[in-house]
Length: 242
Image 1 (cartoon, helix red, strand yellow):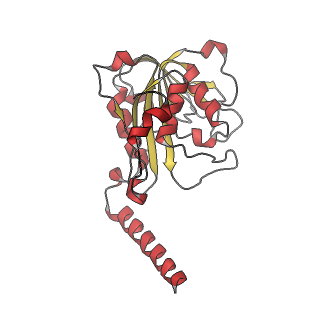
Image 2 (image 1 turned 120 degrees about the vertical axis):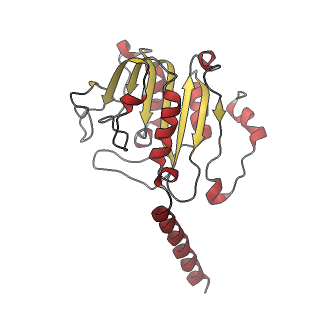
Image 3 (image 1 turned 30 degrees about the vertical axis):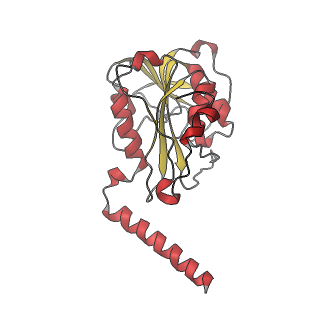
């Protein structure tokens, strides 16, 4: 009887999610829309050189290009790893493209070269996650913007696997360990679709004090599981008050 009840509850759960995904506005459900909206909100505050790391063709999934989000920059580069179907050579003539593998050492001439390093939903596919995150920070002389799935089904191709679902706290701690102050850490916490974490860290946080409010929120999964977040413990775990 309990086994039957369990199956019924699973069916009801999937039914509710299926209905929600059909009748609710996709902008409230689709995690890509969330991360794009967040990038639109903050990208106007950045200038200088920008690189979209592992950016493939720089498409935003809504018919646009991420280059167009950054209104006040001087240069825009896309990098891709070689030897993959969606790798180096994918960016086309629209962009300057460089070959870059986040699991290998950053070329010396690219260290601290960019003002903004942007990376959207690729870190979960890099097995050496912490090394790759450090390399993103190494490319930047100021800002790193990352988007990672924190709750999502496994997805892979013949070219790459799917290894990680880092929590918002993990992203904040990685920023701190690489010398960046977390300025924005936010999830589209919701029960019906995948959840992304959008995060911005800076090596020069004083530049943004008068431009936008700091928004660091470690909540994730509360709509599905409730919250047991102990905010009073955060500073000890991160070894820094943020």
